Image (cartoon, rainbow, N blue to C red; front, side):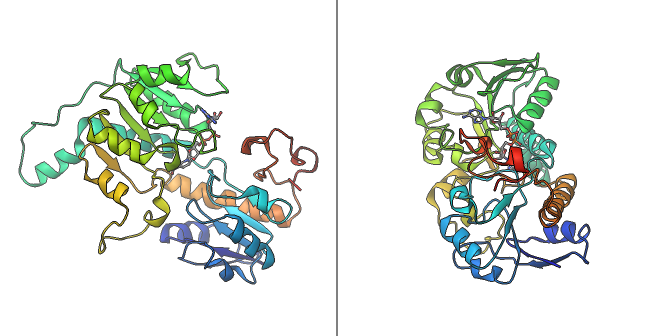
Amino acid sequence: MIKVAFFDTKVYDSDSFNSQLDPKRIKMKYFSTKLDEDTASMAKGYDVVCAFVNDDLGETVINKLADLGVKLIAMRCAGYNNVDFKTAYKKIHILRVPAYSPYAVAEHAFALLLTLNRKTHKAYNRTKENNFNLNGLTGFDLHGKTFGIIGTGRIGCIVAQIAHGFGMNILAFDSYPKEIDYIKYVELDELLAQSDVISLHCPLTNDTHHIINHDAIKKMKKNVVLINTSRGGLVDAKALVHALKHEEIGATGLDVYEEEANFFFEDLSATTVKDDVLARLLSFNNVLLTSHQAFLTKEALSNIASTTLQNIYDFFDNKELKNEICYQCKEVGNQKDCAHVVNGRCF
Ligand code: NAD
């Protein structure tokens, strides 16, 4: 029996995993708490830790898990910026779900854009109060405008497809351009200067940390709509607040926030937000913030559960680990090729 400690569990997680797991093979223990230095000891006696985007998988936690005999960390997400791969190397294998529904995230980026642009959130509240006035609800046609995409991977390409459907001109910045006839690749500065909408779809790495900072914002059009459904650390939130305060940016839709781990996924409605930057962001009426929910569709949850479970079965069946990553893997930013190419496992 494979014993799995599942951290940061929400009802939708346990529902989708329970509906798919083989109870003869896996015993899943769901913990509602996040994984961190204080809670890592809860993994004692478990073979696998299943973790999510805001769990702490830094050096201390990974060393604790390794000491407890945990063999595998099964990330039930695509991003891995919260994992210390160097510490994990040769101690604990790290698997992830590289793609579960790029459509879910791409469509959410448009949910944010369309809401901000056509102000349907304001209209909803107004009409509920019998206020049928239209003042202040003017948007702009997306058709004919320029949509800038930073990172044209799985999600970015679907965003491009949707924007193309709206009749927008698409500019993109990515070190690995794709041959798609409706995407024009340009340098970052040109994308920043030309775009009416900018949407971030690159991973958070040392290179992309604060890719949107004071300088980048200064290069943008004054009425630009900035959408971030990727990772909070891509945007310098203080610089964004400054730009919003000085009306240097049209609107922003954020599904992620640099310091989200302390807030997102929790109901804190009975308390006050202690983070001044987050509180300030929430005070602007041209900011729409969602709580890292871009992934949250039925299809994505089902795919997350099936791939995570398959990853775990493959590990214990000594099969090739298709979704393993380590610090030697090219994707994580290392120049060296990983042993995976030869062995089917990173180590
Ligand atoms: P992907 O790996 O398919 O694509 C990432 C793209 O970014 C690649 O084309 C890569 O070449 C490009 N890139 C890397 N570094 C770059 C740089 N410095 N500048 C420009 N482009 C760069 O990843 P994906 O599946 O499309 O996911 C993208 C990101 O979306 C993930 O890293 C994750 O952080 C985020 N995500 C968020 C949610 C959510 O719920 N909000 C869900 C899933 C993924």
